[in-house]
Amino acid sequence: MTVLPSVSAACPNRALRGLVRALGLAAILLAALAATIGWRSMEPLADYTIVYVHVPAAWLSLLLYGVAVAAAADHLLGPARLPVGTLPALAPVGAAASIVALCTGLASQQAQGSWWALDARLVTELVLLLLFAGLMALRRGLEEPERAQRAGAVLVLTGALNIPIVYLSVDWWHGLHERAAASVAGSSLVTGVMALMTLASCFYAGAVVLARLEAFTRERDREPGGRDFGSARAEGGSARKPAKE
Image 1: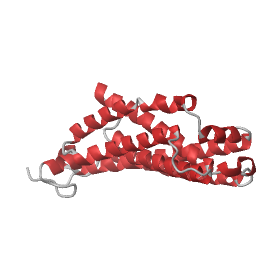
Image 2 (image 1 turned 120 degrees about the horizontal axis):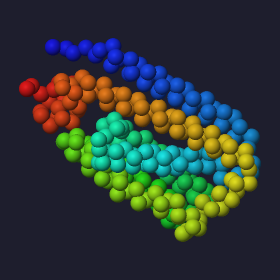
Image 3 (image 1 turned 30 degrees about the vertical axis):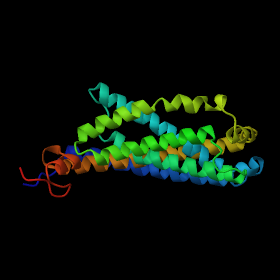
Image 4 (image 1 turned 180 degrees about the vertical axis):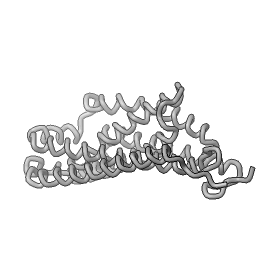
């Protein structure tokens, strides 16, 4: 028998989709504004114009990992107040932000005549990427959703030790980041553009995470008894065709 969603269940979904569209539109408008202003403020940066993308991506990856830490603690300490799919929804978005930060950072180093040079910020960003990738691997590798969720939460909380290292890396090591920061700090216009790009990145990431959460909820609601893909697969079924009772 097909179970139709009630009106009360459909209304929050429509509201969530509206929020996703609003966040996406705000991200596009802010990015366009930042690009318009940044086009005229590239002179003070010399070889560091890539910070318009690199810095917002790095900040976003840290912000997303901070949210993941809060979600992991919420899940382990219970009762959970955040949606069950919060960590799986965050992981790919955080990994993408880390990849962008790493690629733009490496490109900037190459422009300065070095490739890796063990820059502290790039090393800690690589650790963030590996943590996000490990979180995704656990969800795909473990059959039981609850077990995967708990293992991912433990991994995220363990990796939280990387956050103070990122913050203190400027004092512990000196490299290209410090020279770039000195150049950027000389222009309030450039700082403003980076702030706009960071806000646009946050809005875009929020839209993607919420869209993924909505998709997870829809997928779970399709299953009899609210089962998700992992539990159906563990019983011999699939996301489209659950196992027979």
